[in-house]
Amino acid sequence: MPNRYEQLHLAVRQKQPTAILEVGTWNGERATHMLNLCPTAKYYGFDLFETATAETDRIEFNCKKHHFRSDILQRLGGFDAELFLGNTRDTLKNFNKPVDFVWLDGGHSIETIRSDWENIKRVLMPDAWVFFDDYFEGGGIDTTTIGCNSLIAELKHEILPIKDWVIGGGTTQMVRVFP
Image (tube, rainbow, N blue to C red; front, top):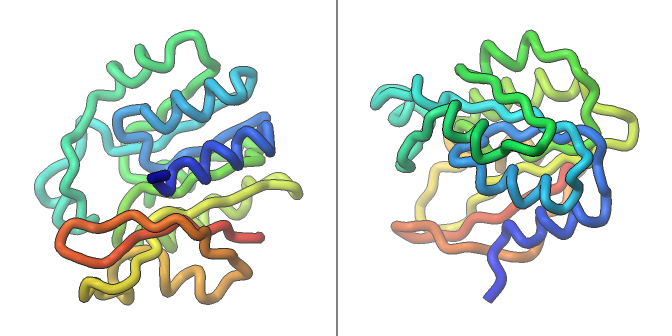
């Protein structure tokens, strides 16, 4: 059974972007997949990496292990990749390189997702493709505080069809936004 990330890989294969921005690089797996599909692209990855704390995990509804920026840079060796360490509410404000592909899967609080989107909009090339993760349905998830549901309701978008189950109930999907 396919998982929702296969839709992201298909989009990268189709778009063949020149500059990818990923919020939520985590362990670099998604970055590696995207860059293997378009190895000449410039990659910009943002994450808390080793600066994450129990408090940021609580605020951002994170339950995953954290990775070191240096380890991810090593994993992405051979690709044109730049990693930005820190909270995207701060780091994205200073980012000013044009991008034509965005994968937004960092913090899960609506405040962080909204901040990320506001900061990313200004660097989008006219033909940019933008994808959000964490569109939740069911399972009692409060989508007014977590996930992209309330933000994308204000934007022209398409909810992609593949659903993955969330621990504790409900599903999550990806969304393509048309800026």
